[in-house]
Image (cartoon, rainbow, N blue to C red; front, side, top):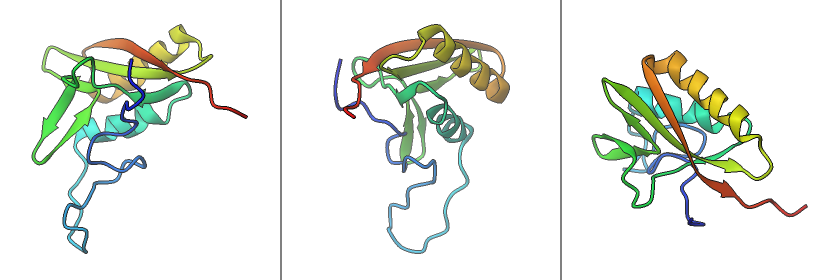
Length: 121
């Protein structure tokens, strides 16, 4: 378990926009389906973050960037998440599976990799 689990796709702002490497007014690239899915999954109740796996190997690789925690394959889609402390695991997994299946179809495997520590009030 790691406390440096990314909460948004690497190189992407948490809001789901496309990071502009130039930092200027260059036109933003359209979002890839994996990036759109990541934004939707991060908005689901109980999902604390997308998780890259033990060695950060779970990702969809795109030109100049990657979407951590989602592996798209023609045969199936793997989604690795960290859930919020106290969330009902089954409910979160079903919400992630349902949202992913709506976007990409086919077989969806969801892995709960970590539980985010509770936030202090």
